[in-house]
Image 1 (cartoon, rainbow, N blue to C red):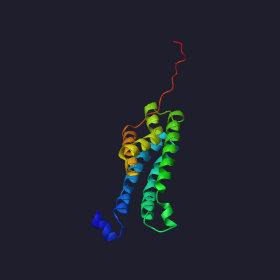
Image 2: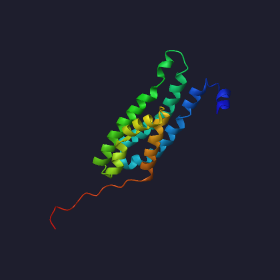
Image 3: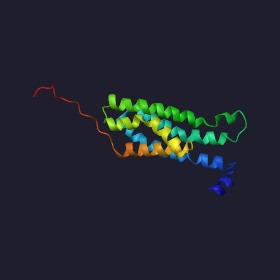
Image 4: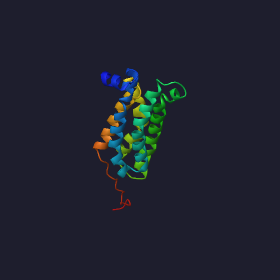
Length: 158
């Protein structure tokens, strides 16, 4: 990758390997988007925020080597990850309450902020480490398509 980065004029490994995390945002967002049909608009917002991460992380890493005022954009993906985590909580609650999806599925979606935080700490690098945990979370959510819970029709009497 270094020779390609050098040919493209990328100013160093930090920018090159930072920009290379952008496809992870795209893959995770694309994997989550189809579940929004079942889980609702907040899950769609989370998926679109994740997709938005690709250009934001690219801009952030490129800005790290630019002079002011552009340099101020460095680290912008941190704000995006916080927004994604908060959106995940809202999406999980809405999936359970409004869309009547299973508790385990909705809870995992709501745990997005915890997953992002724990994976950042475990893998000690941001946003790369953050996306490892989030990618595993979304893979589970994407693999197990949720089904709507049935409401109990029993009135308590036989």
